[in-house]
Image 1 (tube, rainbow, N blue to C red):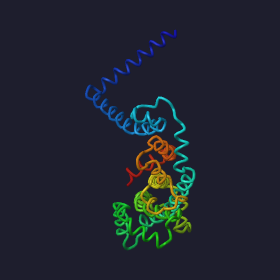
Image 2 (cartoon, rainbow, N blue to C red):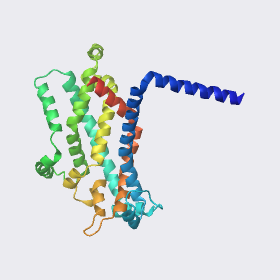
Image 3 (cartoon, helix red, strand yellow):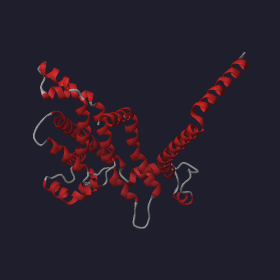
Image 4 (spheres, helix red, strand yellow):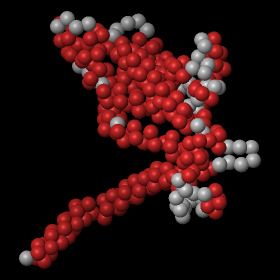
Length: 299
């Protein structure tokens, strides 16, 4: 009986495959094979650099020179302990968490009402505000390095974790406003009209009605902001001179010396730095995909 069932299952599977071949035809099969080949290539290009860094973090220095691209022959976990000590990862992780968390809180608190006002309110110069936000996204921070440093110095924001958090929030604000605005525009005006009839204020409408409906957009700007701020080197190097307040990216330069480079330890530190980004993305991937999909359809 069991053998008969297996043969029936094999026959059904074979008939399904033949039916699929007949429906697709040779051209459809070639197109499907090309799609899968492209996906496999993209997957390899995405995952192999991460695996290469992981492999390098587990090798000895001699093996790194003799076996650059392959996996390690043995696991050298001491690299992580040495990288943690040399780069001062403990205090730098605390600083990065504080700076990134503070910047994201400031960013959401400022970008949400600003995007709501631009999307839902009618006032003179609204189009100019949108145009300025779009133009600001095209200006790299490196262009504003000197005036930004002078303003930060005059305001006492040099070597200040909270000060650089405000600056990070300001640099991420144009893109965040632009993204959230596209979400607010798509919401029906009847929701606001009904709330105003019930006596709700603009602030109450924003917090209790509109904000829960644009959670995918908020998640999107949080993920983009987290990745940008957590990995930023330029602004941190410009504004954080005191080692006690420096973030993780500044600690990575400790592995490059005048006559030598500690690549295995550098890869170990990179692995430690990348793990929080992967964890955040995995934890918020549904909101991230929902935000991208909604933005693509509604924007």
